[in-house]
Image (tube, rainbow, N blue to C red; front, side, top):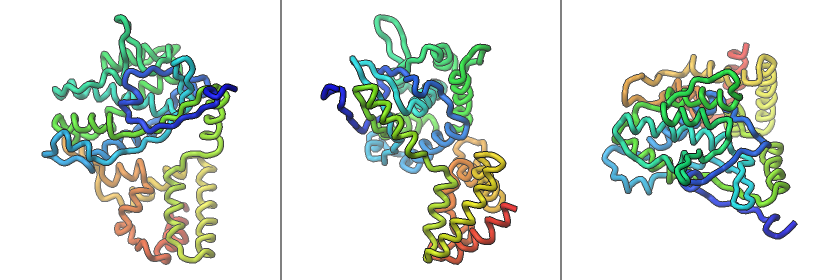
Amino acid sequence: MSRINNKIEAHDRTVFQVLSERKYTVDYFQREYNWSTKHIEQLVTDLTSTFLTEYSAGDKREKGADYNNYYLGPFVVSEKDNHRSIIDGQQRLTSLTLFLIFLNHLQEKMGVSEKLESMIFSELRGVKSFNIQVEERTNCLENLFSEGEYVAKNGDDESTINMTERYDDITIAFPDEITSHSLPFFIDWMKYNVILVEIIAYSDDNAYTIFETMNDRGLNLTSTEMLKGYVLSRFGENEKRQQANMIWKDAVHKLHGWDKDEDQRFFQAWFRSQYAETIRQGSSGSKNEDFEKIGTRFHSWVRDNLDKMDLDPNSSADFNRLINRDLGFYLN
């Protein structure tokens, strides 16, 4: 293998740098787009809520350069003869494309005019092509971009059907509190403050090795697993931590006997029923509240609302009660 073929590079990139007038195909390793509602809701909620913690009414546009960045994770491409194929990360890049199409329609409705088209498609000699090029998805993307909707047809593949449904999810999940005044700030932030790490391989062998490493040797932690890590870290004595760990594992094992995602639904139902005091209103200016936050990232909600749950972060006894009494009670 030549030196250039054996080369692997990694660079941090803004969303604008990743998508603006850049062409990608999707490799056969991961052909289908299969994100579900919960994935797209979490993406939209994470991005918009992070932005809203930075933005203040009255900010000038240049103030956005000082807003905190948001890290969206790595993606892997194979590059040969100036041709780029996505090896890992097409779920996020496709979802970002759908989100940008939605934002383009939203700004038209709000009378805002920011430059987004180059991140969605580009033209060469009068021929338009989308920046993520998969022939089976072109008709769907064209309709979403021009009309804001696509009606799935018999014969559409799984990816096209999922893209149509996820676009509808975005329209529901996007918060009303981002208005015509703040939308240009949000678009700026999306373009320049949302960061990905681009990993480039110059050979198929290296590309596939990276793909296997990222997908076989580690899985993204679920909210249940993140919550478990936090709760167990509050135990001062190793023996009690081990006992709590066994109780937790047994409970999750029982829940998985019903369905692989039953643990997620269990904690959402538990925390919503006992502690959710607020829910986002449908009116303009409303924000995600307890109900929505528990639904997307309940592990973060717990850490931010220990007082509601009568938990002292420095009290092993409180967390022992959570595991040894409350968990078993609601599980039953």
